[in-house]
Length: 278
Image (cartoon, rainbow, N blue to C red; front, top):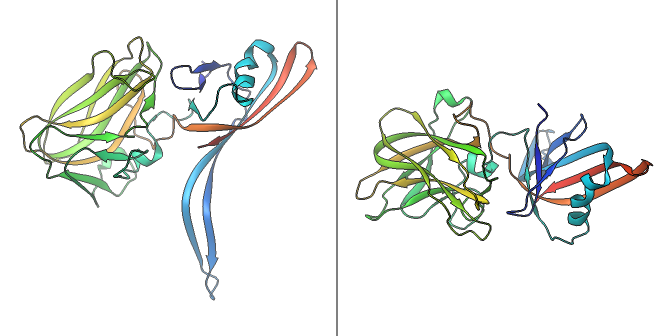
């Protein structure tokens, strides 16, 4: 079965006809390379962003109309891209467990303290650092992945969110549905867990309800409990059960850089689309 691509503004994702083979999806490193007197290299990385090059041969005009609307800024960007080549829809920053004190991609605690720890579940594959979430205030708080960025979804699709936990105390692994305006809608999908001293992968799954455009994936501290958690390898993907963990990047925000069209025979078009991650 051909993979399905989606591109568009929140709540209005447009399904794209599967591109031709040879899709280019390249990570671009930003920063500098410096050389010592010995010639040894030092690489400064300010960020890594993806560039996409997609093409379609003999596409009908109706297939590229939405691309033209977005490329000509009738609808302003950036746009959500659902990339079927990456299963994990969380951001790279969230799966790197980059914790933040502001609302942007990454991990955000609504209360308590967070620090990196050199520990990682071997079942998740290659990795070194988890985060330790501790000393939460007495009231209920959450550790949120991609706080205020959220993750785009399509009503009717089945999603599963999973994360490795160890520690002590009660918690809830939860997906909360939001509409295009970021207002909660429908009933959250939640699984209650009790962490132990060993790494265990916990998951929750559910169907995206009508009216939902985004999902907030989070770990909620058990109400009234003392919870001390180590957190690693979060994943949000299409399906009914969690698959092998992989880094995020399956739902980036992108800009349309170039839309190139030619018509070998009207009304058919050859199309090239270049996307830059925002």
